[in-house]
Picture 1: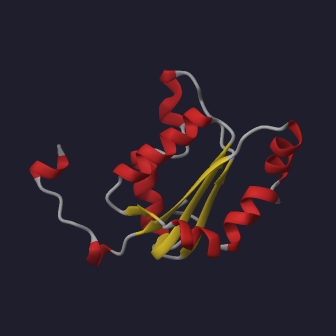
Picture 2 (picture 1 turned 90 degrees about the vertical axis):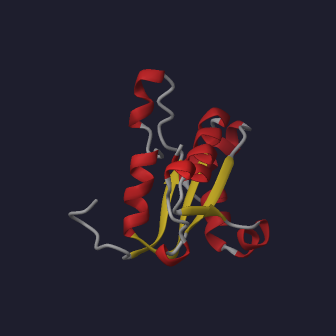
Length: 129
């Protein structure tokens, strides 16, 4: 990613129906992880958004946990989600989303916002562990 983007150059990042990597030994390959979230935060502008959608509940719960735990992201409010045209687009217009819709499957999504560095709480030994 560093070869294609400048720091704080992206306003939105989408992860639509990524491979769930069900086996525990492959969890490190998941597209949402502590390490990769830090990289995404590096390239996102302040208040930039990270969108993720999946049809796998277990993976959705993984996304929520990792994003909630990361100090540089916060979940956007429900009202902000409703006002964001990208939420509707990823939920209805992507090819995979339409495939899930046709098969009657469920879709789970979340939207997170990049917290500006000035708003990040300092990390201490107590808050780290």
